[in-house]
Image (cartoon, rainbow, N blue to C red; front, side):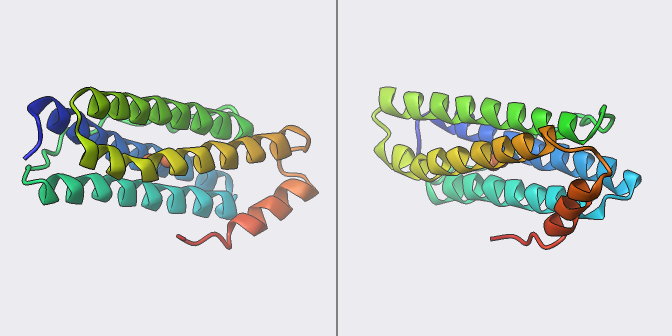
Length: 164
Ligand SMILES: [Fe+2]
Ligand SMILES: [Fe+2]
């Protein structure tokens, strides 16, 4: 069992990760619609990763003797200015998740909930990678023209992305 406050906070994050998966699928539709199937694939894989994160919270709650509670999903944004706009918003979303994870760690420390703190370590490292990945793409996209030669090369590269 976990302290009620800890369970609620972990459960909210379980749902946040589901919401993130939902948001990335909506971003994939933006690219599919434009005919950039590599970028769409990148975002569909990203969505799967978020589902994987959600299930980590699910299983942790169950392991600790708690019941995960599914909340409703909000309608995600699927209209964007351009590819760069999508990736910039992805980075903002990831920064928000990082803040959420930090709050969870702070709460776990306050409650002396050491198992939860150990569980959250993985997410701290994961967020460093996620933010770095989007920053790298932003730099690349900032210097090229959408639909141009280098953009299409990126699209081709992204078609190779699979879940790690
Ligand atoms: Fe995540
Ligand atoms: Fe993420």
